[in-house]
Length: 366
Image (cartoon, rainbow, N blue to C red):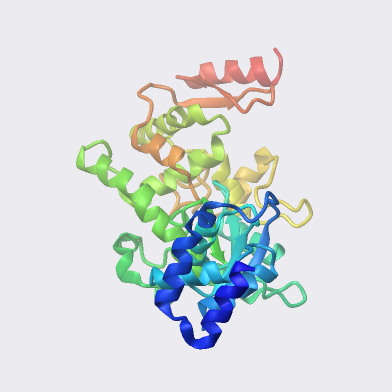
């Protein structure tokens, strides 16, 4: 009844900001009281240009507040009307009016979340984006944006992106893809009209913020004589080899020792990368790889055939693998073999003879 009387006064011409201020003072205590104990979430939409009075009435209709006039009085008296944003808000009747007003000043566009796992190759990521229709543009199972992601990342083109933000990319060898530079993590994208460039930009920004400082610090301290591209290349191999996280520095140490003494890396993941997608098995990383296949795959990425590091990364390494290469374990191991217990752990050896003994003991049970 009190609210109706006040509204009648406003309609009669006795209102305005001073009257709203008086009503606010008389009902200030209600601002901090929830409308109800109901904590169900209501998606509340504010259209652009909606005045405070109309928003208050809509909040009442939605069961979120009980007094539209108090809402208007608080917003107008405190000069908050211009700060109310258009958008979709997740509100609840159990929220106080103060909490609701605060929420209405912070519109967040609907978003979707995508997780890019560590150790995936570019084509694998692009296939995942298409299969899940992440960009919401798939027609008959074909996503133009997922394929654009594959094309831009695979070619390493920087023209559609702001290349000035990523000077480290200009240090790559000519014609290099973005393999290894697109940081694997969880990202939020706009729920509507997300593009390949949106995801690529977020991944490169994350790389610049999280991975690049590790390399710069190690280089400044003289801890590595490898280029950024070489670090990422070796880290991507470590990422594919290491199942047990704590072994990353040890595995990195083995590969660095091999490089130091002029041995070939003989890294299985590089052969798997060169073999590409296996449609019969539905695998991006063929498992197992048989002995005769090591020599049959003629690719510069096959480190059983070609010395030194492969031309570039074979997957997206996480921070653990990058750190493992920048701060490897100091040992004299040159070999390792996976234990057969399914743990993913390895046993290491200094000589080929020791390695053969480990193979006989752990893989052949002799």
